[in-house]
Amino acid sequence: MTRTRTQKTLAKLAQLIANVHGELKALDRLAVEYQEHQEALARRRMEVERTRETLYLTLKQFDPDIAPESIGDSDEWLRPYGRRQSNASLKRYVQCLSKASENN
Image (cartoon, rainbow, N blue to C red; front, side, top):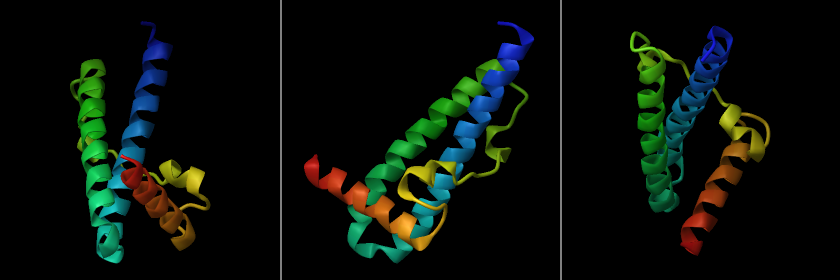
């Protein structure tokens, strides 16, 4: 892989990891605020944690010296639900998780 392609891939992986970190941070907050949706939130947390581990392994393959845990968080993952980190966006996110949980 060329240097430019590797850098683009690393940047994309870092953004994906930042999104995962942001979602995990939000899930912590939501678990406290939405007690009635604990099952759906816990299920989503497990999925996101698996994704995080996969992304960490992938990033380590490209650059073993990078510490993926040190990558910050982003709220880009919340964009489909509305304005970032607004209460309405987070509520829509929880509602979608609950609907998906009911359908499974």
